[in-house]
Length: 381
Image 1: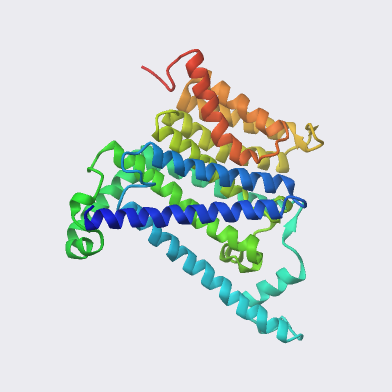
Image 2: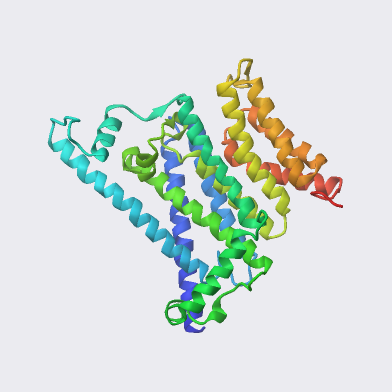
C-alpha cells in the first residue's frame, strides 16, 4: 500500500465513522421521542437505517470499497468539520448567552442584540406548532425548489451540467495550484474523473447529495439535541416548526436520505436516472404544490383514513403536477404510475413521512412496471 492509498483509506474510514455516528444519533433521537411523536420517531429511525444501507451499497458495489472516490472523500471530511465547526460554534455562543440570561433574571428586551432577543423569544414560547402560518408554509415549501438544482447539476439546461463544469474547474484549480495540490492530495493521477466523462457527472452528483445531507443534518441534530435556539439555521430563517419535528429530524432530512438511497440504486444499475429524477422532483415540487394549493385555495375538505384532513384542490394540484413532471421525464405511461403512487402516499396515512417514501417508491414502482411491460422509460424518437 502506497502512502496516498493509505491517505485515501484513512479519509474513507473517517467518513464512514462520521456517517455511522450521524445514523446512531438519529436512531437515538427516534427512540427517545417515540412516545410523544411516533410519526417523527419512526421516520427518523427508518431514515437512519436507509442512510447506512446506502453507504453499505456504495462500498459493496465499488471496486475500491470507498464511499466516494479519493480525493472527494477527503473533501467531504473537511466539509463535515468546517460545517460542524460553524454550527457548533454558533451553538456554544448561544450557550454563553443563555448562561448569562439565567444568571440575570431581569432580561429586558430593550437595547439587546438580535441573537439575545431570538433566544428570549424562543424561551418564552415554543416554536413548535400543530399548524404553521401560511406565510411560513410558503417559505418552508420554497426550499423544495432546491430539487431543481439536480436538473441543472446532472443534465444541464442550455449549458453543460454544473457537475461537468465543476469537474473542469477542479482541473483548472489543480493546474494553477499544482504544488499545493500535490502536497495535500498527491499526484494528479490520483484524481479519478476524466474531463467530459459521464462518471464525473454521476459521482460528483453523489458528492453533492451527500454534502447537502451533511450540511442539513448537522444543523438539525443540534436543533433536536440542544434545542431550536442553538440552531443557526433556525436563527437565520426564524422558521416555525411543526409538532412532527419535535424530538425528530426535519422533513428535509427524510427527503434527502430517500434521494440518496435511490440515487445509489441508480449508480449500481437498479434504477433508471429518469425514474430517479422524476421521483425526486415529484417529491419536491408536487408535495409542495399540493400543500400550498390546499392551504390557500382549498375549500372542499377530504377526511383521509386515520382522520387527517386535506382538500380536493390540493390532491388535484399535487397529482396533476406529478403527472406532468413524469410526462416530461418518463413518457405518458410511467407518468401515470408516478402520479398514482404520489396520490396514494398523499392520501393514505403512513407511519413514515411521505417526503421519505416518494423519492423511493416512485422510482421503484416505475422500474417494477418497466420489468412487467417493458416499455422504454422516457421519450424515444
